[in-house]
Amino acid sequence: MLSEALSNLEAAMSEDDVIGPALSLADYMRIHERDIIARAFEKWAYDMTMTAEALGVKRTTLLEKMKRFNITRNTPDVNERLRAEEMRLRFLSLLR
Image 1 (cartoon, rainbow, N blue to C red):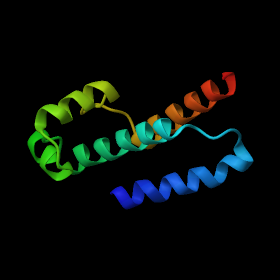
Image 2: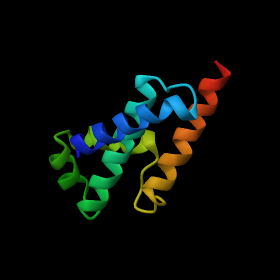
Image 3: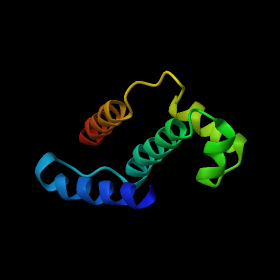
């Protein structure tokens, strides 16, 4: 999963020359961290303990991150939310 996130990050960074200003590293990390957690949660059938073990974090840490990223069993399509978050961050970077 981490290698997939890094590949996505590299692809997004190469698109910045065409699309607009680059996002900060923190913005990219936030987008991809949310994606990794949401996909793992779905993969492990919404089981908090199994997801936390698979990600190598404590269950309480996973719960805190899920609250911060607003990830629930009813979370809409992960890719749709990621695109919306990336567009919001790009817009904010234009205002800087």
